[in-house]
Length: 244
Image 1 (cartoon, rainbow, N blue to C red):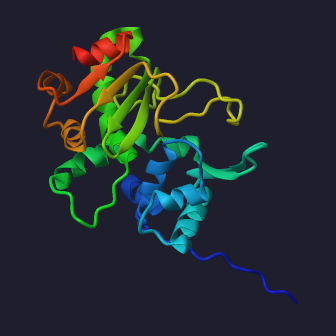
Image 2: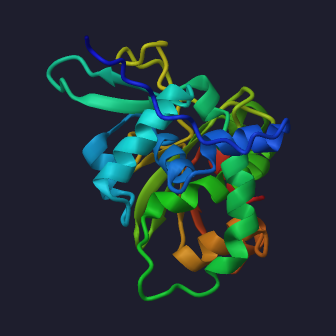
């Protein structure tokens, strides 16, 4: 007679507290950083591993399984010609964006000095920068909806500002136009790695300036006036960011 396999008991703080319940799901090492990567859209396992230096393949696979179990992420196979398996956040997983935004702002003072062992990816600056751009772009009214491309020495990423509840500023939704490969008809991402196809505004700055903006120790207006931030583009969004 075959023996039934028993799933390992899920670790829990066993506290009737919403914070403890949240940490049951995302408190393990690497989980929130995986969420950070998936906020940029669907990612293959190999891409996740490449942008999470220091994580072992076993730990990454285990965390992804846990995230699927907890309805934070899901897997799907892309249609041909890609035919690759990707991981993406569920609606519940995308709801962690404000959590990561607050955590990034809280941790910003610790970035005063870059250690020799520190890895860096340009898109890691996206999460703390999003609420700054959303707040400044709000001055454009409806023109605040658009794509901002950000260029650092370390690389390029882009941030999507739109209208709905997912925006970390609390005013608008960060989503991109309809994507037929997305199961919901939309590829709901907060930001993307690499350049944008047709950005409404483009920012050029260095990593220290980007860190200061995210930490709140430098305003975008002061950065533009001091020549630390270059804003280009003719859209209403670009004009709002330039004159923030």
